[in-house]
Image 1 (cartoon, one colour):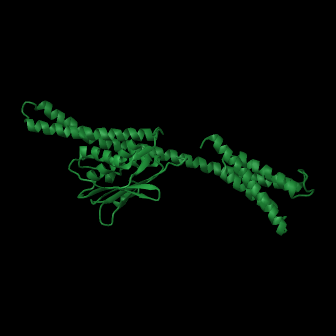
Image 2 (cartoon, rainbow, N blue to C red):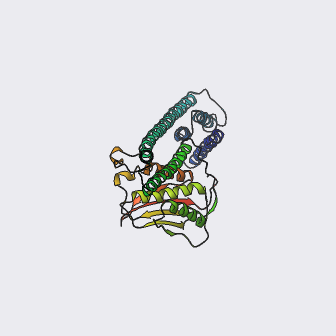
Length: 353
């Protein structure tokens, strides 16, 4: 929130709280003898203002407003200021002390939260660097090895063997390109440069584009698609949502061992388009579910057989893109076996977004 909007909000809140306390005291005086409760209620108002606003300014301002209101309307001589009386001075000191202590506490909490967020960002950055070094090493080693074989044995290798090596190199290069695309998204997200340009996108066209790109790399894997028959248009950044859907479909192909069925379902419920990618493979280990979208891979979960992984980075990018669209992505194991990834997008773009 911009500073001027925050100051405007805090000022309006201060006035509203103190006005509400003033009206409450007037109402209590009409029905009860509440002279002893008056300072306590204004102290409560000062506490609320200090708790809900930033810094010390508005808490101190609420204290001054409270002292003036109590002195003018509820202390003798009524409807006149007498700021030098011992009672009024004591009330002012108490209110100022409450506002300063509360503002100090909220400021410290805010600083601690910022430090914690910064530490979490550093941890995630270190986790991503570790995952990147692990995931890029295998395809690069494979490409280098295939090149060395072809260079050292180009006279003796059969044409079929050369084509096989070239095919492997191309698959590894394609995988590296997709990984680099994910990494570029990570850096844009981390630098807060991920611009989500939402435009109305026809659901059927989005799914067709995703499937064309997916079948280009996995022509043998069939995807069962279920979308509404009605015309559906969703505000989104189509390129980024395509990246999310392709990442999750490819993730299922690579990691869902034993999978025989892969489905992509979209349903419209309560003003939201609900996307779900489900498979009937091996499921997700329980210890990985909580940290699945952090980009982090524990040492005991790392791949040691020389196969490409990329799961953590891809899912981290998916989660960040969906958060940038104002939603969250979820993963769960299905009771009948396999895993499901789901997220929902608003059908109408809110003013705040």
